[in-house]
Every structure is written in structure tokens, then in C-alpha cells.
Amino acid sequence: MSDQKLRVEIDGAVATLFLVNPPMNVMTLDMRRELDEALTSLEADPAIGAIVLTGDGDRAFGTGSDIKEFPGLLADGAVVSRKLAPENETFTKFANFPKPTVVAIEGYALGGGMELAAGADIIVVAENSKFGVPEINLGAIPGSGGSVRITRRIGIGRASELFLLGDMIDAQQALAWGYANHVKPKGEVLAHAQKIAARLASAPKQAICAVKQVLRYGIYLPEEQAIAKLLDVLDVLSRTQDLHEGADAFINKRKANFQDPLDTSKFVGCMFPK
Image (cartoon, rainbow, N blue to C red; front, side):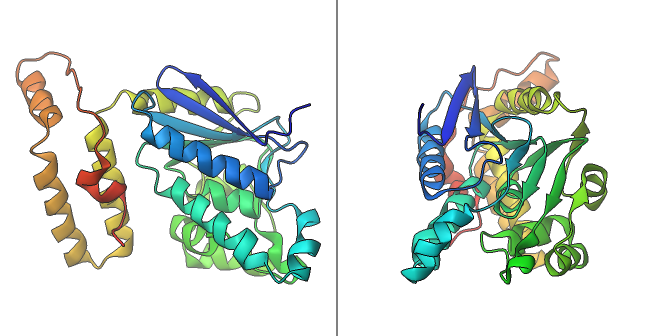
């Protein structure tokens, strides 16, 4: 039996990443490392245009940290240095991924699972899914970026309710709160997520990257600065061949043939610059 905690399947330009730690896909140190390595590899692969992240099986996307690892980490005083700091780096790498990201959730997404998924561009969930950050019940707080990304996704009032009470919400509530983008019947989530990813993978890569960047400017910066940065991005985008191709295709009523490769150096990796 393999000890591998992450499985990658590639279909065309879409890579699907499975978190593999049955039955609940808890996040171990090894899973975090394998996820980090996979993201680095897929970002560099020009054949990959989008990724889907999901949990193996239908019980859970992920339910947070493997608590069995904590006694040793606590004894060494290494919870932050060995666990949470690297985990935040990897979850940030996923949130900042320059190619489109779609998360498919069947079952539970709790704690770190909900935090990780919050970094996706689009989240597709099953009707029976449950979400929550129950760390308060352990005398802890969400430690893997959820206080930032979940809050920005759903707003501070709703995030306060989740974090302070530690209760779960269902799929329809997650949709109403803006955490989820699509709710699908159980068993149809992954296929729907992969269909969205395939569509995104066929879109002009530089424009996709630019969209991801300006959305983040809109979150991180005051309005006037965000608009100034938007104009900078548009200036760069106007020099790409794909934009000229798109304009010509529109004028001549033909399908555009976008061919520009992704060049993250032009758009600061699609992220708010450090």
C-alpha cells in the first residue's frame, strides 16, 4: 500500500489533485509537502492550464490537521515552525497559483480543509457537504490562513460566527454566504469542477492571470491604488499577442486562436506584490 498522500491525474490541460488520507483526508506533514511540490511542478508545466483540488473518496475534502502529530510537535515547541508556518506557505502558494484553480468538495471541509479550499478561484460543493472551523472547541484558532481568506470570501460578520461558535454550515448556507460558487448533487461535483477547469484552461492564459491579479488588488489595496494598478496591468496586457488576436477575431467574426504562453513575470505571479 502506497504512503503517498497526494495523487495527481492529468486529462488534457487539467490536472486534478486528490488529497489522500482516508477516511477524512486529514492534513499531515507529508501531505502538505507533497501538495507543495505538486503545485510547484504544475505551475512550471506549460501543458497545464488549470487545476482541480479535491479529496479522495466521498466522505471529506479534508478535515484539517492530523491531531495525532500534535503531541510530538507540542513537546518540541515546533507547532508553528514545523507545522503551521510551512502549511501557510503551501496554502498561500495555492491561493496565489497563477493558473485557474477549482475546488471540488464532497462531504466535510473542516478546519484546515475549509481554509485551504478558501484560496480557490471557484468552489463546487455537494448538496450534503458540511463546512466549519471548529478549532475554538480545542482551545485553538484557525491557523492556516482561514482568518484572512475565509473572512475575505464571506465577510467579517459571518466569519466571526464560524470562528467563535465553531458550528458547521451546510452547502446551501455556504452558497448563500458566498463561500461556495456551485452546489451539485452528490457524485456530480468532481465532473462539474473538471468541466469548469477545462473551460478555464482553454481561455487566454495572460488574461486569466491578469484577472487574478486585479481581483487581488481590489481586495488588498485602497480604491485609487487598486485602479492605478489595474491600469498598469492593462498596459501590459495590451502588448500581448492574444489581445490583438482577440480583437481581430471579434472584428472578423471568427473564433479566436489564443496562443500566448503564461508569463507570470509580467503580472507579478498574479498576486499582490511583496
